[in-house]
Length: 484
Image (cartoon, rainbow, N blue to C red; front, side):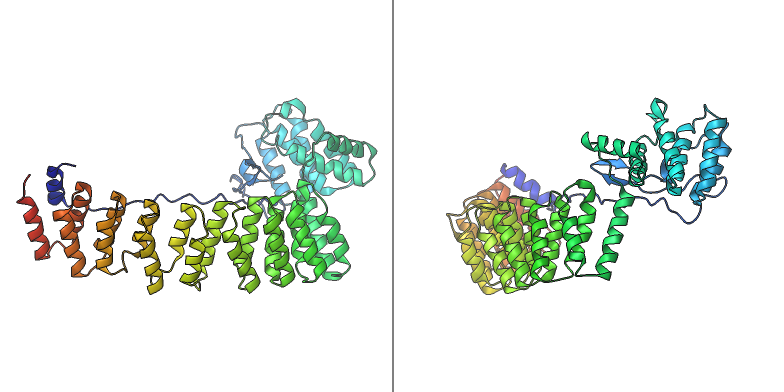
């Protein structure tokens, strides 16, 4: 920057500021829609009311029945008949609804409602659940064929078909059982969410009736490994965690280590953390030492940091020193330790000497309590240390600039070997209200040798807090009267 630029800075006195870009919140997984509604979704003449979709495997996936996907075709010959059948279905009058949907397909074979009518007839018959209705439902779904490959329900048909076959197989239908075996052998597994929810309710009821006897069943459930049963396993974990005995801890630990579903592993770790006894902490500690899955390690560290148990806190502090875990996990642990608010500067000083990267050092600098005398002195020591990187020293200056003695701060400016460090000192002085801070900014503006740093000092001097100070006006006039 040329001297003329400094004069421009005096005249314009531009404010400084930075805008930090904030990350968007994670998408929240929405609950699937329950088709069992207790009243009509819409009144005559209205469209169906909107339901949310569930997010599954990164794709929009709807439940069997959601009004938000129903398309209406006014002017279609079957429009009024289909709407009447749809109303009956919404009121859970399944027998009449199935017959009306069947009539729509029989009387209006070319209607645009044909595929939706077939789907809802099959669904209504599935709800009725008699062997004849289930076989009819299978024939209706199986007969939708190529005509409905592009229909709005094409994603829901395989799931409903799998449900129908599953119930028929349990009722002894040999053909359905063969279809189920064939689909399983080909990896065509469709999760039956209703059946899964029934299992969860059954588990809960069994645990309430016979807590001790339920353990064998819970152990069997936790031994399953398919994706569809993962929510059932997570429910089982909550039931296991009602007991704090060694057997329950062992079951939770096995799931935390071995379950193929990450959410289930995390649920097991969190359940261990809530038990808050030595056995549970020993299991989490073992997980931290043996697991190679960074996500599980994060979950285990979170569980430990939430406890005020001396054993848990000791494990967390040891984790911050470990070189065999991911650095970002160690940084997260350091932040968690700092959030507890009862950590001495001596601990941070000791840990600082053991870490091996600037990212970890910066995390410690942020963690140190700068409002204590020993904390401020530690930060000043880092800032003065020429062996530290400029980014570490600059951060230390920024942390201590508002509390360190101004002579110490100005001495840091004089010994700084990078522009970034000097700018940090200037920003720190600008935030101070003492007259001595203004004097040092004037010294930098008038006598500095880096035009960018001088311009920064001038801009700070020109801000409202200082612009009416006679010393500042005189300093700026002196600069303007100097050599251009």
